[in-house]
Image 1 (tube, one colour):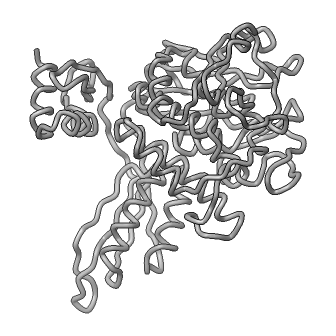
Image 2 (cartoon, helix red, strand yellow; image 1 turned 60 degrees about the vertical axis):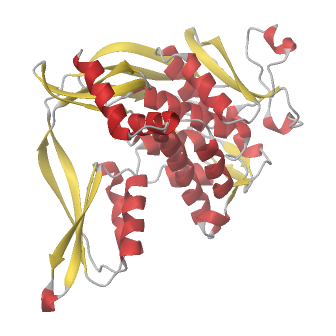
Length: 419
């Protein structure tokens, strides 16, 4: 099983995550193409940086083309957000996103991403991340999620961070993410809500239920974008699991304090764990709820990180026809999914238990077809392949692009794999 471990001893932000991904071997072209697809007149500047003697990769977002003056400075610019004039041709400082004044609603951001020439899984990951951000902001302001206008995270740099990260996540095809506890830093931060102790309100809400601590520096180490990306990845938290590490990347943060390497370390490799694991199962039976609401709950559960959602027709007491709603999830997602079922449905209770599951090792390979490159998901055990299937979203995107049936793309992908 292909797994990844995030060592967040210096926190996580959008630009640190991008830097770690590139440093670990993700082709920068993937990120550049994703940014170009947004049509925001934004570009990425990627360069090497030194963080307390650690060579790492620094990523900055520029609105407009990277100006010639910037190219003459090999070290990154420490530009503070409150000094920005918000004209084109300037870099954004990701550690100061709280100062941005740009405002975009979730609907506008969702439409912007959906309009981009990106495959469906990338769009889904990016939109899900913004929905997590929106849910936290809505809770803080006590308004509906659709009425939230993203000031800090609606700016160009945050949109670019999230979409580029989604493209890189899609390209890596990691089967399971893991993470250390998150160092949030310390001190105070100026944001749209006023001066707050670290972590800022939206960040604090996004980190609810996750293992965090404060150590080493009086700086904001986890940004709202970083917290939302962690939520989207839904990692298992703890020490690095037993794994054969193949790639290591370091993503640089903006600050460079003495004696503290402000980097995010990403390790990628193969798991040494057995193929047996536990999965949380949430169930509730409902006989008085509109099918439209049930469909909505299913969509929201998947957006909250459920591994699978199933609806089964059942006969309940007094001969009533009902629906048994079953959700499979990792433990980290259980509180949010439990709250979703109690809040959004008419149920008065949810059953939660754990079941043992046996999983094949999953890997990906890419094949060339007349309709473009298609990823093949491979299930194996003890180096014997049991299953191989084209990724449906890749096939659907290729079918739409070439105006052919999806099954035709699937058949071409299988033929290419077998040959």
